Length: 110
Length: 138
Ligand SMILES: Nc1ncnc2c1ncn2[C@@H]1O[C@H](COP(=O)(O)OP(=O)(O)OP(=O)(O)O)[C@@H](O)[C@H]1O
Ligand SMILES: [Mg+2]
Image (cartoon, rainbow over all chains, first blue to last red; front, side, top):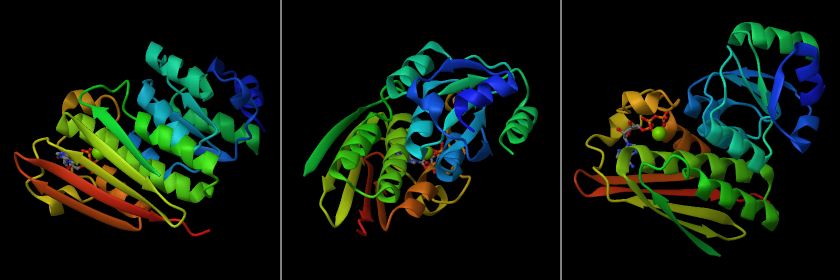
């Protein structure tokens, strides 16, 4: 299932993403500590975090995750959006906490 | 091919530029994606460390078909106890930096884990130099 379909199915808002919205999501990874995520987030996974700043975009780009899902009503700051658009990283917004957000995606993709 | 990057201190908007640029260049040159991933992760962690712990620094990347050599040099405060700094979870990051998601104390361990050769030299009050190599297997 791709990022766009997940957004629709789970009721997430799309904050950024162009071609990136067609990327297939292979799994879910949850973490807010950037260098943890940097070392461990698997390629093509949806990465759930509350870190709505541009460093998340850098981590997403370098680890090649399928998308960033900001959970718990976190809004991305302006710099993050700018970077995400520039590098075409999909950013989804979820009202739910990390666990419930992950569960929603899990149900959608399995 | 040799590339130079200047990493400005305390400018989070530009941290990640060198690793992003090197990643794009390696892609164009056709390096295998796992080699690119290792190089970009290690370089990003080093770049961020120079920004948050050392007021910026300089990166030299030498790219050949057999390996990628990275040298990161700064003239920051230096590291008093390297062995301690290398441990998982050890961090002196400030509250402000932690609020941005840094400070897990995993940067240096990641750099070591993702590279084939890793050396760090540091002198308090003089600066820190990190040398890393990633072999290209193809
Ligand atoms: N270039 C540097 N100059 C001075 N001190 C450094 C430098 N790089 C690392 N350190 C010291 O080593 C510690 C461990 O670094 P490491 O990258 O592993 O963790 P961190 O940067 O604190 O957090 P994280 O990388 O997980 O966001 C730092 O907290 C800092 O005290
Ligand atoms: Mg670090």
